[in-house]
Length: 422
Figure 1 (cartoon, rainbow, N blue to C red):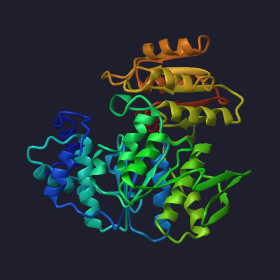
Figure 2 (cartoon, rainbow, N blue to C red; figure 1 turned 90 degrees about the vertical axis):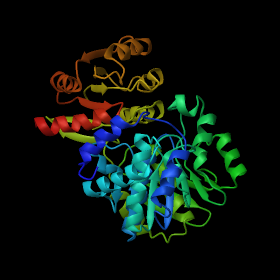
Figure 3 (spheres, rainbow, N blue to C red; figure 1 turned 90 degrees about the horizontal axis):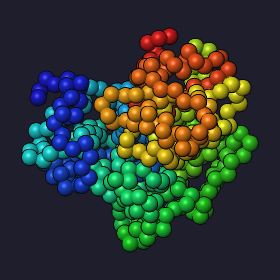
């Protein structure tokens, strides 16, 4: 174990863990105790939600870093390197930090058969504990109530939008899923929710737990203007804030929730720092625009109906003269019908690559479902992701737009493909 490289550990974790997902906190709590993990930061912020967690955490990081705090962030999944999941002051940690933490978790786990995510989460906790962070920001991987991240008690919580996803684990309705998200709440711990249609079950859970819940539209507000936006709650307000580099009205809701969270934490909020934090915001794969081979290329990790709807709106808002080519893959755990239906009318030419391993829908399955929704639209299949990228670039013209979506994997591979072929 002593000399394992990070790639060796990745292989070890993927092969050793008997279950990729096995919800429950007992295993994590036992190993956490064995490792002596107690405090991982002076203030711990736990973020749950279906969509919007990544952009919310990026803004939280940006704000606190611009205020001189030491900040750790644990997020998932990663795009290019595992190190992206564990960041200190905005930078991915070094391989050595991770391999040392993995070794300690393996030594301490005993007979506990940790999942990949549980193992990773405990390693992140160890790293954060060593850094003596001012702020530790934790992204829930799945749900909230039984997610490994929830083995640490937060000081503050943020719940972003709630929608249908991971039904096999969380339930088939927003009300059921909201109960799982609300599982991060604690008695007397403030929680901000930026979902504009908060499920009743989340409100009920907050009342039962004794959590101080703050809601968008009642406790805090935002308004979009021409080229700027305003935010206010009962105590303070900001006018003329710059628009976020991230596209979509939903991103303003996310940002509004973050500002309320920061205000709830009692932090002094300087308008110039807020503006600086917003303008510096960066997040790969969230309607990210690139130019390659004289074409506009858009990368978006949208992988469920709600995020696909936001992507469709952004595509419809584009000033364009040509067609939109969409390279789409989707995991079999996702609702194929709702995802494709959300993109209806936004894509002119669909490209469905086939991937090995059986984890993703085949091009045939995607095309069959598409025909039920849009009978006349053009669709093409490819034998691989690279084949799909080639097809999009050779078929399209300079005035066309290429969008790649459906999974973190397609975004990662397209970026690597462009790097290697330009």
